[in-house]
Image (cartoon, rainbow, N blue to C red; front, side, top):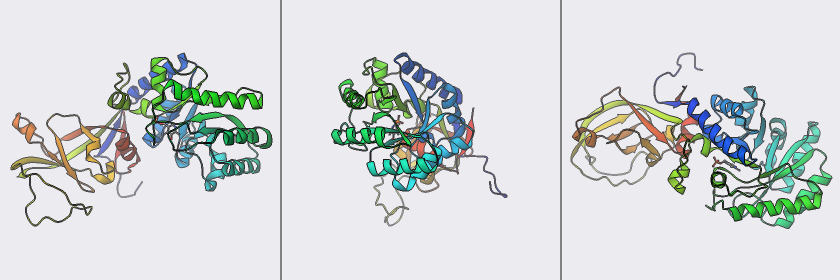
Length: 371
Ligand SMILES: *Cc1c(COP(=O)(O)O)cnc(C)c1O
């Protein structure tokens, strides 16, 4: 904290922990009915500790993130749940991965060898989950013989690693749908490994939020016993937006972004003067709709990541015209035409999507309020 200034006003992010708890209970309950344990993925909310505490208290078997500094902060906060690094680590990270995390997802033999050495130096056993790429084309073994060989090496030759299991990820880069058939490919790989090593794997990790739809529909292949879920708990928005699911009981408004109106004036809708480029060097088209009422908000692209189409005003009649680093411009003429308006000092509330949630939870400029 700065000695001269502690931010208290707006913009702020209101986090409804009760609604988050409800989402955790619904998702964990459904998974538990099918014998699935949940790794609570907290990178979407920058591992805000009061949120992570809800994940831990609700009974997530792991707390997971793609970022070591977030997992370190979770440990620092005294949360005892097993930690999992879900972005496959780089060589430069192995020492910290072993020190901070209990589990990590992996797909590179060079990194796995270094994890084994680091675990040896630290006198620990680190648990690895080998990732299979079944078509989404981000991380994971494509060549399944290479995966099998690596599994055997971890099992037989690496004294400081434990082969915890296998996992996969779909729906991230390649937009591949988590169908039951797709996920069965992972179970087949797991069973091939189990046959070679002569024991059952602890975990078969069947993906992220997109795989939760298989739980909802009850058609997830039986042996999958772990899902790594973030968005479906924090926002639960993609189910409806992208997949047409109406999941009864899940709140889509755990997070509310609040920004303050700092100017309200009637102005032309087309800029006046010679038109060049905006603050970011872009050529922009401006539509001339005559004089309209505008409201200016004290929040900008620095706070929410730059994409105004990913902020969703809760009030009707508001159109987001644009933003620069620290200002966001609203057209509120439609409100005015209905006999309503905004005035300086009013607070405008927004729903978020995943991208804006990541940015606003990460911004030190945004005050976090927990209710
Ligand atoms: C981000 C991530 C998840 C969680 O994704 P959600 O869509 O937020 O559920 C799971 N696994 C991996 C490897 C990830 O990177």
